Amino acid sequence: MNVPKLRFKEFTDEWKTHKLKDFFSKITKKNKSNSIHNVISNSAKFGLVKQIDYFSKDIANTDNTEGYFIIEKNDFVYNPRKSLEAPFGPICKYNYNETGIVSPLYLCFRCSQLINYDFFEYLFKSSVWYKYIYQNGDSGARHDRVNIKDSTFFLMPIFIPQSKEQEKIAKFLTTVDKKITNLENIITSLENQKKGLLQQIFSQKLRFKDKNGNNYPNWEKKKLGDIATLKNGISKSNEAFGHGKKFINLQDIFNKSYIFNDNYSLVDVTEKELSENNLLKGDVLFVRSSVKREGVGLPCVIMENLIDTVYSGFIIRCRFNINENIYLHYKKYCFLEFSFRKALLKKSSSSANTNINQDNLSKLYVNLPCLEEQTKIADFLSAFDRKLENQKAQLEHWKQIKKGLLQQMFV
Image 1 (cartoon, rainbow, N blue to C red):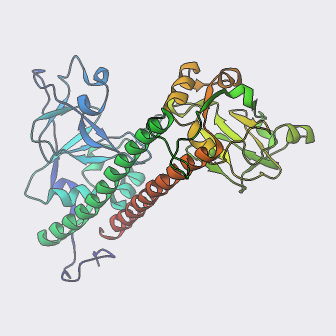
Image 2 (cartoon, rainbow, N blue to C red):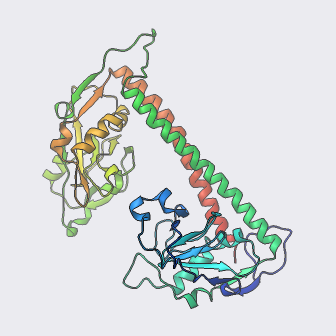
Image 3 (spheres, helix red, strand yellow):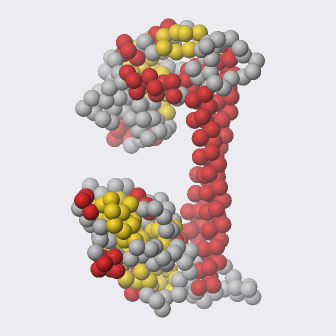
């Protein structure tokens, strides 16, 4: 029977079989007078959005838009460009009241009869849509795009319930989306709060007190090269990988605060290379090269001695002198604070990637309060991070719930 795996119990009718063309037709009207300037982009992450709001003005300021398609509220747009969020390209519904125009690279289509627009919006986010495009689309020479013939597109078989069930499905999934949006807003707010706290703490506008209510001693400012030794990792040919000792690469540390013993990839190294590039508790690994400018120089603290492990040449190891008394968790935050990051980015160089070298990194200054205040700072910020991570875990949980619903609530 043509019924979904997951269904509201009050509905028992079989879903009816249709083709997409039974409900939609291609939009062909173009902006021939070049009079509409509301350029719309279809983003898998943001949906159909005004370019001037979400993207750079250079992208939005297109001189000639006569070939652009004109869209109205509740029209749909297919973007053939693949992404992590939409591996076969997103279809999004236009939700603005004002008329917009989109690039002729997109396929635009409009409903030719009364339907529940929100139901179809979720159908196009379901595995039903992705399966059809996967089976009928063609990446060709452009592996970042999935092209499909218009005729094939509109022959897509779809199964449609009665209008009341459409409405209930759409309303239920909208509630889930609201929960996800709410969590995203909370996370954004917490991340902004954290940035503010980091700036206040490390500019010393916000100070912690000792057990007697007094200020701790004045902070010291030390050049990183005076308190630590910096060293690049190793580079190997492809043949050296797959056997040997554990190997930490960029992906293992990127967007991570801490790193522990784990099952990493393997590389063949000599005993000398292993000895010179070992990793000990308290070392800090810096991203030496990043495609995104904001990723260069991000720190990752090693929380335990990593057994028989070396690290990539795209990483800089920072090992503090034995006489430097620095709290383990404080190392994470002192390299993320605004003044250090600003100075690091200023000393970085950019070509295809953004890079920081050992010499420039060693010239940067680190703010060091006494050990007791370091501990209080790190413990305070760690508690805030746990709150933030809890919200991120909830967000991921609800995203997985939505993914499961989209797989089970459509035929």
